[in-house]
Image (cartoon, rainbow, N blue to C red):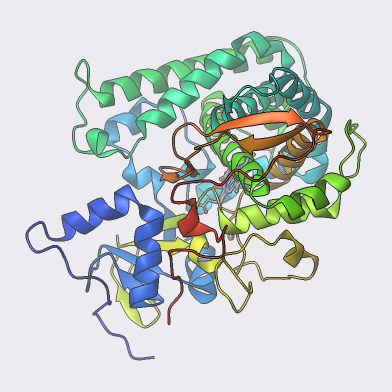
Length: 469
Ligand code: HEM
């Protein structure tokens, strides 16, 4: 195919140039990406002719970008200021590339096999039951916040064992503070100075504190005792005789805490909200769920279908970016080294040829749908594909069975559900919901306000047109 240098895309802003487009993308990555695809096709620049940031949509580009790990590196390590990189004790899988990543991944993989995940089922079920017990029927609470706390507690206790139960909330708060500050926020990237009151100083402080807390846990574990948790499994893991040093463990655990809770908490919140808007699908699922699911309960196919459908419509990581570390080509366009390539699960999952009525929440489609890995990839694909997928699947099914076995959740009247995309796509701000005993008669559906209507067809009309026409 002939190579061209001009990538299509929107024009740069009249006065502010490319910076204005970059700002629009930063504020609403999902909306900007959807518009680019719709208006400019399968390969488009942040602005027309852009050679710094290119968007590549669809199955073939997903495959090309995500599998060629030596050409396309994950972006995290390139986006973090040097001072922050130097301050950390170690880094995790998502920050690594090439041979270093392959070696670490080989060491870590056995700890995340489905059989290993299953060993956590009893603890997850207990923590989910404790959470549900704490709800007062009829009183509104913030769904996103409760799911976030729950998944963070599950992560802390499954990763480090019940003996740090008293410190789980403290560690959870540090992880939340670190996420709130975001490594690549403009205030940190463009003002990387260790001065009092700056976000950069606050981020450095929280990183050091979290690293120290994790190092203490590792040291205490080395001093005594073997436990059936993820930390022990990672400490014992070897590939060709090589395992993780304590500092490397700190880096891996930080990444696991971050990657391992926001993703599941947002998916749980989105799932419960989508079910509240689809009474027929909700009732169908309830019919398959007992009021008290034991830990040997076999999850029904309907639960699997509901989760798959939520992850299709509202994947927690809607876009995946890579940096080309050498010149390459995409869709016939020359791509220089250091260009950022953005792929989009969000757009890929809305291809009507693969998913008829793509904007509708239709869990039943999964009884027959068999998309390929690059057509449906909520857990990513290629060398960086989610290592925690089996754990996440078990965790989310266990939590959903505990919640739905007991309560029907409905949005509080006037609830607004919009997206907020930082590291993940989450419901924006508090989402008040009301829990009612499952045996109560179902109330009429409480309609949602907010830009969720752009992304999912809840009432027979959506504002977005997606897909290259
Ligand atoms: C709904 C739940 C989850 C979703 C949708 C999800 C999705 C993803 C995706 C898309 C990636 C690839 C990122 C990329 O290619 O740049 C990824 C990587 C990763 N995930 Fe998950 N994840 C989930 C839960 C979890 C959990 C529970 C854990 C830990 C127990 C976890 C640990 C990781 C790690 C460590 C990586 C980096 C792997 C590597 O770079 O080799 N994730 N995840």
